[in-house]
Amino acid sequence: MFEEIRLRGLGVIDDAVLDLAPGLTVVTGETGAGKTMIVQGLGLLTGGRADYGLIRPGYDRAFVEGRLTIPADSSTAARVRDAGGELDEDGVLVIGRTLIADGRSRVQIGGRAAPASLLAELAEDLVAVHGQSEAQRLLKTSTQRAALDRFAGETVAKPLARYGERYTRLAAVRAKLADITERSRERAAEAESLRSRLADVERVAPAPGEDVALDGELRRLEHAEALVRAAETAHSALVADPAAGDGSPGAVDLVSAARRAVTAEADLDPELADLGGRIREAAVLLADVAADLASYAAGIEADPARLASTQERRADLAALARAHGTDIDGVLAWAEEAGRRLLELDGGADSAEALTAERDALLDELADLAGQASAARSRAAHEFGEKVAAELAGLAMPRARVVAVVSQRDDPNGLPMFGRRIAFGPGGVDDVELRLVPHPGAPARPVHRGASGGELSRVMLAIEVVLAADDAGVTMVFDEVDAGVGGRAAVEIGRRLAKLARTNQVICITHLPQVAAFADRHLVVSKASDGSVTRSGVAALDDAGRVRELSRMLAGQEDSTLARGHAEELLAAAAADKAAP
Image 1 (cartoon, rainbow, N blue to C red):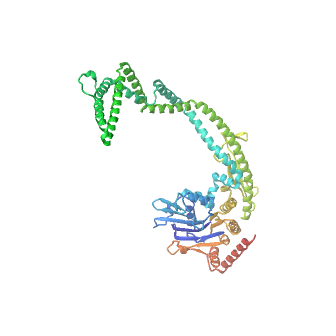
Image 2: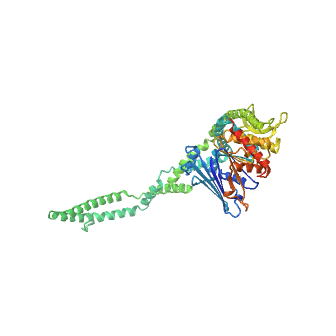
Image 3: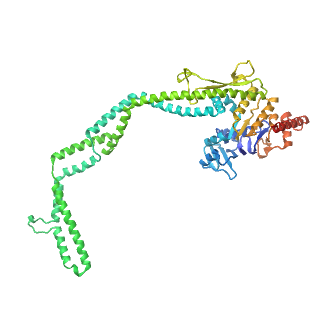
């Protein structure tokens, strides 16, 4: 429920605050006083389209803020917290919308910046606007089915929810089938290319890291003599060759002599003994290296045949790597992925067969679910028509009735139902059209063609009241839905709004004193001398103020004795009506 709405820089409104209350709040005032801006502000607070033309001339921005009370444990409060917002300690949610003249829009929800789409989501559970533009949208056949579904409730919602899931799956299956069918040639060409390139890989049959290993082997084969010469020279430097005949010792002999010299006197000084140990370690290491050098030199052998075969193998690997723009490990990774893709392509026929079977099963399931929803709609249509007719009877149209016609269209590619093929979409197979029968014997015609302006307003109000009957606990806004009516019908409009206000917060913008008389709270909007609406221009009326305002609305004269008497009579009658059980 809204506690307060503040508007600043919006249209004719300079800076105004509306203090709202439970029950029925009516807003009245002279034409052009800014009442419509209140509805525009509510539209912005409920995520409506940002119209920057609403910014007051001379201002760089317009601002709307609302304070609402919502249960702290409600799903709405949870969504606010999920978005990073918070409620005040007393359970009040503050929401705001700012329009900036340069074309930007900002939203605040519970103290945090948020997208306008979140405002729209929250508004679905909090606010229902019933105005002239909304009534016009309801006249469109595209929204009439949704209205009937809303009235029908779970009887339509349950099968329709399952239908929606299967419809989405059908779209995916059809897309895959189309891809398989329409791209069969491309898939065949891709498969052939993959087979050819995989055959090249299989012919070469590389091993992981083989290119790197062959590079090392080639260097050894190509430089065998140099490697053997280096190893032998190093070995000779470490170990003296007796056959050389020059008598010069090797490094191993020299280190061994040093070890013996130190060992002979090691008992004299622990430090020298320690150095002797280190010389012994060096001797062991040099001996091991000398042995390894001898083994290495013996293992290197010039092998022209092996060199040629290795060079040929390395060339094959290099050609394969160049063809794929990577190394051998990359080629092997590609081959693994290509194998999986080839299996997928070769299994296209099997996939098409399985998808076709799934598509046919989905069509049968959709037909069953659509039939359930259609039957529920047909049952709800009859009850809906009766309830709207009951409302029209109280709105000075006692012989009129509204018929919700549920029909289907043939389509050769549609669902198999009722012995024929029926067009279907995300909402099922039904077209719904609201038709008006103004009196017995008259033909049923679409409501926008079969009603005069005043009748249309009453028909739309009756439909809105019926649809809104289940919206207990929300804020409902009626923007001059009483246009074009008067007299007894106006009184009945006020009575119905008051009835709705027993379980909802109702805000009504009205020009009719008969409607305003039923208010629990009456706000009047008036302009200042400069043509703007300021804080002082929005006032809550006491009993005497209400009599004056109703007198003005009745006769254009606040001090007319006759008008005041009529106003007092209207207020008394409305109070008695609201007090009745």
